[in-house]
Length: 298
Length: 318
Image (tube, rainbow over all chains, first blue to last red; front, side, top):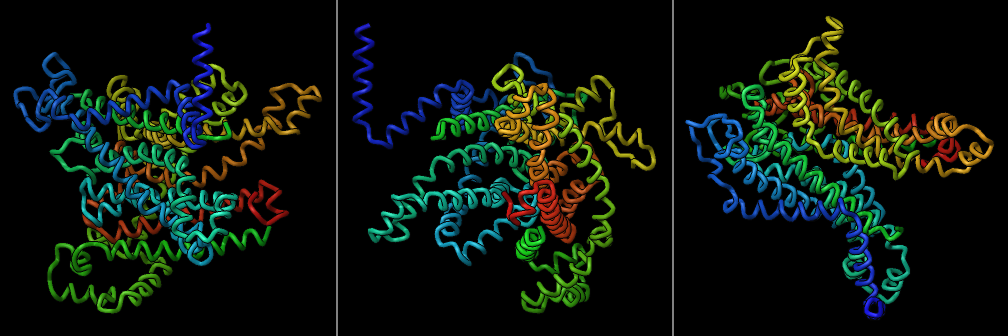
């Protein structure tokens, strides 16, 4: 009992020594850890990243190696998830397919952040004609159906994973422009920004030292949720033949082939699809958990 | 009300102009000479020169843009290099199929999302609410083309209940048409249902906190009547806006759904055009869909203003 009390006291003491930022961070972390679905999703995401990185070590076979004596074999002890139409191991292809999804998810969101944050900052901070122009451009970009824009861009640039990522990145940029702009507008009215302005701080300093760090939480949540969307978008483009090109394995590309063998080899369709579903679900649950944990109104 | 509609119209115009500039630029982004691309397989210098003249490719880019815009405003979106059919004709031919698929999927989405959203809100933090939340998150996370493949595997291959693919026009055989459209509509409607269900739940929770709902309950009205007659009507209003905003997502989903179920609609047209390097068709479809999106959202906002009397008074979206 005494031990518990003293540890509580030392915890309280430690908390009082914390800076306000680390205090907020610790409270957010505690709130996050209280949400089992978010924690489980986070662990799953780490596993997914590890699988993608260590795919060559984890995969039992070469994902491109064909075995014409084992074409369309059902799951067995030798091939745990079965084989495809030219005798390639499904498990190895699913493991290597994680790479395309991870790269596409992260890089397209990075492109959207690199384009969206500066445009949102400029739009919200300077207002006026620049704001009006950027906002109309954003509205125009938002009016293109996401996949149709990505398809048109992939068609113009040529089908490949790189071009699919550029297309997805451009298509998701408006969300970040709007979000950053909204954050700038709300943060700009705060006293500390007004104080920084009054003390003669330059625009760049105010934007990067005060406005951007205070917009971090919603941007992080949105980035996580957008990775989920980008993984679906990449697999959709690969499914249509406009993303990762064969023989490189990708979950969408595997489903594109699988749809031609539905009655003969249904397992070919089950595993890649299930992988997309579970990975996207994990990012969505993690994003939701982050939002709840970082929301100061909670 | 009139100032609101006018203001809304005026903001749509620059957006539409930027859309046309972007669509025009995508065509110019294509690697290589546009005349060679438009000529397709035909490399006859006379044909290429004719195309250059026809599309004013020898003129400066702004002149080309205005010439192209003039054609677009007259309803001329160019010609398919594969079939020589006017793009407008091709779009109008495939449009009813995608519109039917979209309307059916909206119907499926509304039939699922409204009751589930209402029950989740009324029974907040109960088992039913958790089931609803899991359903919504799963609906948001499942790739619809995979859901389509799984349904074909189960319903068509395994149980042999419904045909796996193909399309029969509704006016020729309504029953056959519906039998072939129900699975695609369900697949396309799942994602939308998930989004609408989340929105329905949160707006219902918001409405249930309002004073007039408390007053109705305090008067002794039955909970069911309060929920269905007072709260639901008001909670439904934001759904109109969400539906409009989700139209783009629906069209994106239609591209994939039509591919899985081999439905000869808009989505299949754009994918086939990409593989045939039929850029005029791709460009026409991109321009058509984004213009339709802007105009439908304009109408949605006006409908919203009619449904929400506060806008009529203030002229602003509240």
